[in-house]
Image (cartoon, rainbow, N blue to C red):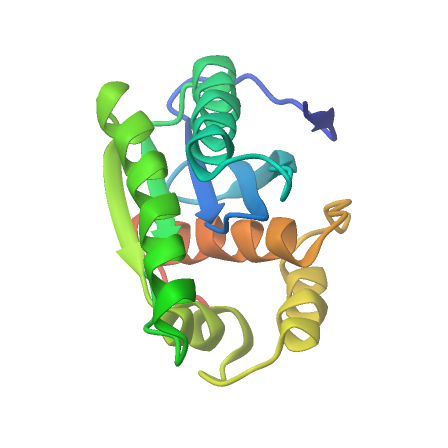
Length: 175
């Protein structure tokens, strides 16, 4: 399910789970944080099979995300807000995916924080309309060793968790 990159166990640190929701692929990332530092712990992509019925795809996302939460016990969960797509069916499907994700977060009693795509892009790149490559290039700036993400969704999940850290944990100026 997850590929370990590093693990640090220190007092007064907590985990943030960042989630980039999607029916086909949901990216997730775990950062370990305190008020002065952050460290990449793990990330991955939950994939659902397009040939499966919708309810089974949503259940796959629910169960796999539940495993991540059980393993890493994040204090906070940060998720990207849904944007309204030009295609109503796509927007509805993304809303249903978010519903499955929010349900597992609620069932685990975790604190949930929402960030818009523009908030995340601006926080990570300095530009609210950056593309995926811009986000991935900027992630290299924040980490001594670049997290080994495999998909755009995984990289976005790292950016979402990092945005939450900067907004809620960091006590000094970021940049």
